[in-house]
Image 1: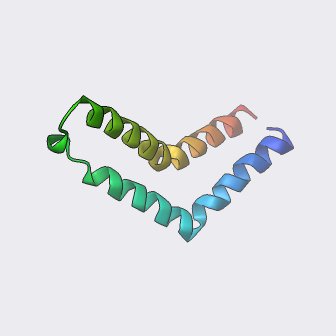
Image 2: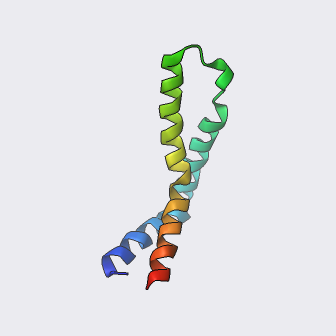
Length: 77
C-alpha cells in the first residue's frame, strides 16, 4: 500500500472512532427504520423513497466498505 493510500484509510478509520460519526450513522439508520412501504401513495413517492433509502444505506454501509477495502489492501501487501 502506498503512503497516500495508507493515509486515506487512516483518515477514515479515525473518523469512524469519532462520536459524531456514530451519531450520524445512528440517525441515518433511524430514518431507514421509519420508512413504511404501506404508506407509499403513488409511483412518485416510491421513486422518492427509493432515492432516500439508497442514500441512507450508502451512509450506513460506508464504514464497513472502507474497512473491507482496507483489509483487502493490507492483505495484498
